[in-house]
Length: 148
Image 1 (cartoon, rainbow, N blue to C red):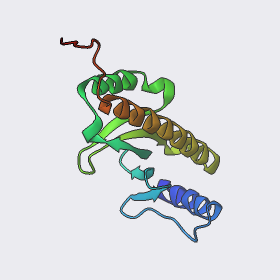
Image 2: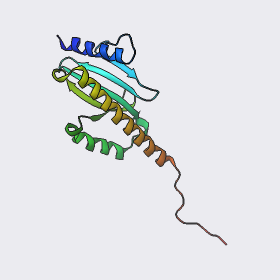
Image 3: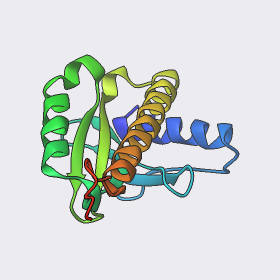
Image 4: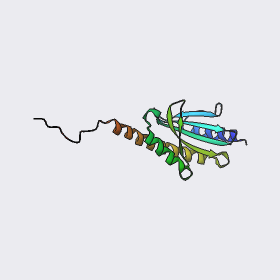
């Protein structure tokens, strides 16, 4: 069975599990929306026989230079977590990614990898949204000016 057939078979089984009649790659990609905020793009790279799971986390407008440094530091350790951050300049979003070698891919592995990516994505989205909300709160004055 070819890599593409394996992926399509796994996606069809996943579709049936979540109540869809079918799900397949179109031009080597398919996107799923799990709610208003969480979208996952499933991208097949035939040249490397790799399946990429890419979850949109937050809009780029909230990412500052300190956060960029944190993401780069996280990416340095990506083999430990099997996850890495990327910037999608076309959609203007920060993404969390997981790469899967097709040789290791079966339905259980796909389902576990997707579940882990969704869990991590929700955690990062919550953390980054809280970071932005905290940054938007106006600082309270440290001293009071008393004029007589």
